[in-house]
Length: 208
Image 1 (cartoon, rainbow, N blue to C red):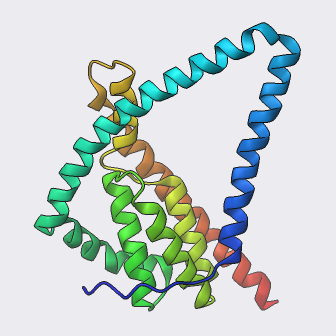
Image 2 (cartoon, rainbow, N blue to C red; image 1 turned 90 degrees about the vertical axis):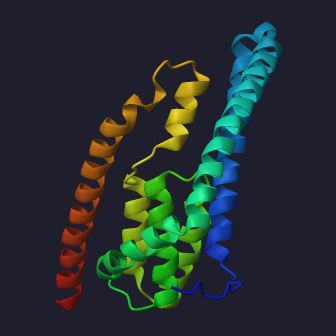
């Protein structure tokens, strides 16, 4: 499967969402700092420095783990296994999203494959491009279905959770593989089923 050419699509809604999310985080920080200063002004600075120290230590630990996982997935990419997985997901994606747009389905398949393998950070840009293509084709159903699948996120390798468990000193960080697979499989099946039900209900209402 050929990778489609990249297109620069101006998307004001994506910028608005990003700006809103950043604004929420900034507001939460300042409100928390204000309340902390009101109730415990002497403990604010030590807590701030301690939190920064812990965040730095956790970031370094996650960085080391991500380097290992990204190296492993780079081997998968160079060997062609990740591309084969994306091609294997493609027919399912075509039926799930009810779309014939090969470029949008390529991005959606890559997004689902990256989520399945637990690639840190990789699914997001692919998902954004897929949603842009779906909206450009006026296929809101496909965009909503992709959102549901990303929210439920079926995963074979929950690399982020494993990395966090390792950073926290877990003796067997990978023992969550089977529980995670079962939980995300159940959530994904439930999410898709609900999406199909509500899509049918919406279609019936629009026909009336």
